[in-house]
Length: 509
Image (cartoon, rainbow, N blue to C red; front, side, top):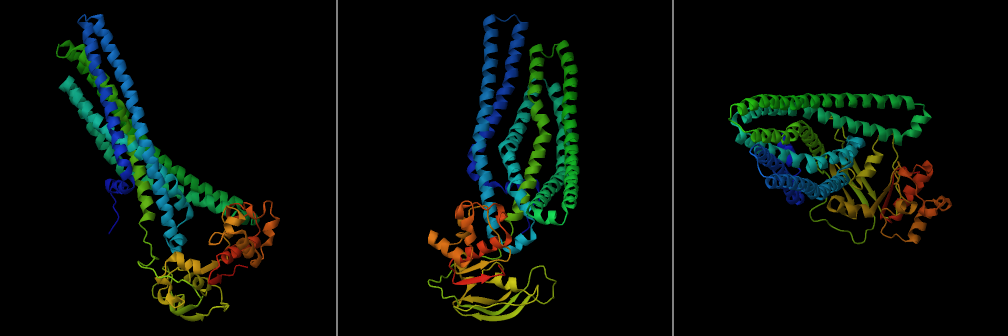
C-alpha cells in the first residue's frame, strides 16, 4: 500500500495522535469563530450608532450603544484568550506523544535502518518537525478553519448591507483563492527541500562535534567549515525561495483587498448620494471589511504553515512507516536456567545492499560453542567476524539457517530475554552522558555496589576510583573525557555486569 501524497490525506495521518486533543481543539475552533462573530457584530452596533446620530437619537441611546461596543470588545478579548488556553495543553501533549513514539520506533528499528539514515535527519524529525506540527495544530489549523468560516459569514454580512458592495468583495476574493491553490503546489516542494537540508546541516554539526579530535589532528577544520558553509548557503537559498513565494502571495493578499476597499468606497458614496444606502450602513460595511482584513491577509501565512506541517508530518511517517524487520515471536519461549550452549546451523547472511547475484558475506557457517569454552574468530578485514557476532543478539537477522541457544532457535525468544543471556562488548566503545555507575550497570539485573565492583575488577577498570567522584563521576557525552582504553574497559565492565550466559567480545581491547 503506497503512502498518501495529497495535502489532506497526509494531514489526516496525525489524527490517531490527536484524538485525545480533538474535543478541546474543537472548542478552540468554536471559541475562535465566536470571537470572529463578536467582532462582526460590532459594525452592526456602529451602524445603529451612526444612524442614531444622523436622526437626532437620545443621549441615553448613544450611551447604551457605546457600552454595547465596549462590552463586545471585552467579550472578544476573552474568547481569544479562551481559545489559546483550550488548545495549548492538549497540543503540547500531542507533540510529546509523537516524540515518544518516534523514539520508541527508533529503538525497535534494526541496525540496518540506522546504518542508512543520517543521525541529523532523525534529530531534526524529533525536534524541528514536531515543533512545526505543534504550531500548526495550536495556531494554523484552528485559525484556518475559523478564518474560513469568518470570511463566509463576513461576505454574507457585506451582501446584507448592499449586494453591489458585497459583490465587489466577492469578486476580489476569487483570485485570492486561486492564487492560494497555486501557491500550495509550488511551496510544498520547497518546504520539503528546506527541512531535508536542515536535517543535513544537523548531521554535519553532529559529525564535526563527534569528530573534532580527528579534524584538529589532521588540520581539516577549515575543510569541515567550508563544507558546512556550503550546506548553510544552500539552505539559505532555499529559504529565500520560500520567502519569495510567500512575499508573492502576500502581495496579492494586500493589494486586492485594498483595491476592493477603494472600489467599495467609490460605489458606496454614490449609493449614499442616491439614497440607496444609509451613512450608518456604509460605515458598518467598511467596519466589517476591516474585520475581514486579517482573515484575508492571513491566508498566505496559514497556507505556508499548513504546508510546512504537511511536510513535517510526511517526514515523521518516513520513519514511522519503516517496517520492523526483526520482531519478537507472538508466543516467545523462555530459558529459565541458561547453560550457555550456542550453535550455528548452516548460517547464511547477506546485507541488503549487496549486489544481486553476489555471494553472501557468510555462507554455510556451522559452529558449536559449549558452556565454559572460549572461542576466537580470526579472519581478514571484512570477512564477517563482527557480522557473525552481531547475529547472536539479532542485531541482524540470518538470511537462512539458524542460531540456537541451549537448543532453542533464538528467533523463538523475545529480543529482551535473548539479550539478557548474551551480552556484547563492541570494538567501538559507546558510553552515555551519565555516571560511571550508570554506564556499567546499564544492562545489569543486580545493581548493587558489590556487582559493580566485581565487574570493574574483572574488566581491570579500577582507574574509576581515582576519578573526582569515583564511580559517580559524570563522564560526559560518549565518555570523551576518558581515554580510548578507559572507555573500552568500561564497555567491557558493562558486558560483564550483565552476567550473561554467553559473553561476546568484538575486539573490545
